[in-house]
Amino acid sequence: MVCKKDIDDRLPAKLIRAYNNKCKHFLFELPETNEFWGRALEEICKKSSDTLNNCKIAIENKNNIEKSYIKSYKKYMLAYFDRNYRKDFKDNEDKLKKCTDKIDWIMNEDFFADWKRDDIYPETICEEIMNTT
Image (cartoon, rainbow, N blue to C red):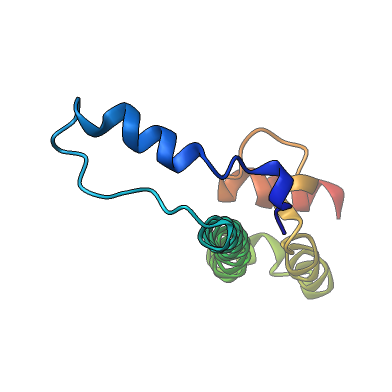
């Protein structure tokens, strides 16, 4: 709340007098009550709060999009691994399962932060999994 002593009650009248003869396009008079300015300040605060909330929602949506992307990419990676590397494990189904489980495990919502390599190409991920399993 704005204190009365913080507002010069004569300011609107001073501004009107200053512009009265100089600006023909000045179509309205400034309110002379502190009540108007208090309501104006409340509206500015509300709009600022709404803007901040919209920014927060946009950030949350971005995070949700990233999580959704990783989830879809994990499905793709599992299919890619099965399609391109299954033949390498024809005699070792246990190792195939370990590799598949590891892909499933590392491709979580923190994948981009945790992955230490520069690229996220399927071949790179698969090779890394095979070399560490």
